[in-house]
Image (cartoon, rainbow, N blue to C red; front, side):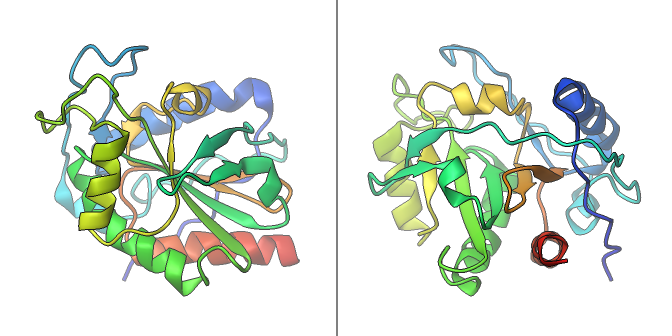
Length: 225
């Protein structure tokens, strides 16, 4: 039985980067994640770090409940195209809860949770109702895809999605701007954004489906309250 933590509440903008870094460091040994070194041109291969596999069945941070605060911070707005060429602007989804997942094709824990994210997307009516499921990936247009720890280019990512029957929108962050703005340093990383566009949850590491549902339902419930 998975212990369900209280979803992280809203944070003040000046504290976002520091708070996320501190939370990531304190949960790193208990979360299943791929370390991803950010660089402007992806010249170096991002290292993959796999920790205790039992962490995949634990809440983000193990038994630790994320720090809570009454302050608020709005999610960084952006516009990116998905694998079908459709543009998505985050702010256009205000009024719905957003499940925003950062991942990579070379990341083993990301691959583990992708079928559950696809299930979440389909079970919530393919973004037509209260929940919007979005993936974000950082293509490497200079990469042939031959290395398991280098990201594929856009066409390679599209092929990967087709081969794995993944239909939820995956946004191509070709410049890495959104990765940088959200301070993503490990993969996978998930943010939950409420109907008003504010952060209400942050989870570094792979999430089991039960926790995905829990975070989403809590966010929907908080907005309905």
